[in-house]
Length: 574
Picture 1 (cartoon, one colour):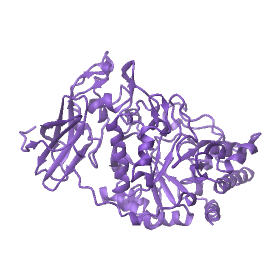
Picture 2 (cartoon, one colour):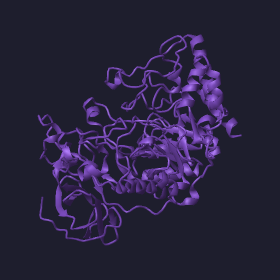
Picture 3 (cartoon, helix red, strand yellow):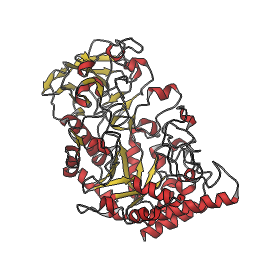
Picture 4 (tube, helix red, strand yellow):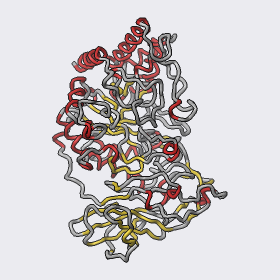
């Protein structure tokens, strides 16, 4: 590291992250328990640390400094000093370069290396040990950016809830195998908005595309060691960053350009967002950002043993939205995606976790109240996944007015009814009427029920009528992962069949389920690929399959089913 050529002054704590003002860059970072925060500036290729500047001022829990003459495009990271005392909840390790939680853009990517760990891998003391290796060569770094102007509000389709038809899709998987999309654009944000894709969606009749997570993703180390990756993306580590792996030739501008093209076609963009946990995992996970900046503030720790994390998410950790600065981070992120990137709504993964207060789930708790009061966020579509794995985590129908909710009871009832289970008709009647038993309260409307038969998690529609059992061997978990009960029926043959009677049974059942979905009260959601008969080969937990298992097979499109689905959606919308 060379002698620093940059001088740093006090700056301001007003805006967190890195903010360029035309003459220099102000840096502000939250950490309640650190004793020092250092700003590390890197060479343009991100490989060499050229300067390490302690942030000179602290205002409350915000550390800040101003670097004059620093320009947009500068690459930086953070180092946090303080106690390394996991048994008290503190995991400061200045040897680990940390991502700014407010980073807008990334340089480089994370690499699977034990240097990402704050402790010595394999040491007898485990996470109580202290690792002194520099993690900088193995981590993604933040880039100083100038946010574009606010997204034009008049361009938004603003489709009423009662007219909404949602299409759940993956940013890469939807176009990776589309031969009529330019090869350089397949699997990218630009590919999503390519003319053939927009034409398909418009002709299909959907009004909104709900994208699986596109916040910057950290691939779990255990997956990388198996030669896999976190394809679904429910492992966020940068809440302001469009995942770089989906960028096309235009780079950072791709996402915003995609949204504008969707809007021009009359289609809204909804993001599946993961604010309930981060990609840092449990106490044996890597130190990438939040853990190193202030573990005891960003995460909910066990009160009697803060070495360990509350795990209401099943993902190793739980973010602490009860802390005002963590709540501020989430709200700032949401507003950024609306005001700057142009999105029209959010589906909150494991939303019960976000609404859990000290004494459990609270429909009038801080996070949900903040969303509904915010002048920007209260105007967009808000969808809750109303469960998690914590105590009392299943909360279908209990979110406040203004929210829609994923209705798994609709899914399971529909599957059991068309499978021929006994006593299915009575339950189906309630589902057809907007699941009024769950949602008809406090002035909520039928659209609050997000009705679906299939989603990314589980069998797609073709597999639902082709497999009695899951076949997840490719995930490398001995077929122990994924749901065992899918309420599926293979019509007499497990997997592919050329028996005309079996094929007719399957085709009829798919049409039955799609018809019931589209004619029921509530907001219908269609899984991408179901309209053309895409199969995942019996895998009902394809979260790590970034390959032809999950990429939509357009060459094998069932044109009869596609035509039927188009007519069905047109009937609903008319």
